[in-house]
Length: 422
Image: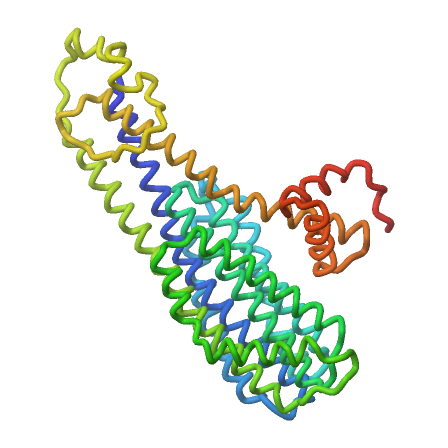
């Protein structure tokens, strides 16, 4: 007959398997971040190339495409390593769906590049295409963060995802500003888009600061060179305050691209640190879990005495007899512990992890609700994403409420809204 120890060992093996899956996912996130960085730079150079009518930036763009292709090959190799046969992968359905979408986009990437090279697409069309692919890649990271079963790993993934998302908004800002400068004319719609992207960066970086380790936040603050930020703010003012239709100095496109690139490259340094922290956390937890499993195997249990049997019901004030307390005492295994004490320690740890996960995932759930509310407004009011976000933000300011509260109110009205016209 199987004992409690048998099931405790099985539970620890499941935990190790989950951590190993998280480690593999973390490695995938690392390569995904590198490809996103390459595609962000490729997008900016493509806008400069299109804005100059193909007369400039062609060689720089070609070099970046070669680099992006190398990283893409690494990412596809990571995809191949994932277990697509097992039905036991906890986040398989959503994660694999996101990967399938991304692969479809990667397969079409050369077609996009060809159209840019032939000057067949506008900067807006090219930007939207790159944004769609990069958003798909970031969705892979989001699914990893949303399904992580360990609270510390989940916090690191949330911090990394929001930093990557903020960096993507910075990349979109670079691309939009490059197109405006290269085109030589101010355009009100693109100016509003720039303001939206700047605000979106700040919002993502706030979440990153909340969930990241202090060392990563310190690194981020240390990489913010005052000269670069001052130059960026000056160029932002040139772009965002020019009257609609007024001329812009096309020669400033290179200065804008270089300034934004310096900031984004520094963001990449922080992103790499976050990815390294994530991988190290996974490795450390796997080593610790294996050590605990070995300690379980080393336990020698003799026949239970009457006192051992009745210990389940004794000393309710000394320990939580339900085994599901919310205490945060460390789970250090000692061979002299009884099996009951081990089970109670495991239960307390799992309960604490569950509560911590609820706290971490609250941030992700808020994002989901706000995005759903924006989608509802876009569908029923025929708004752009920027306009929908601005509407929700204005409602929150007018009503002195949080964005998430306004988003919930918008979604609550979904059932009474008229059917979308087709």
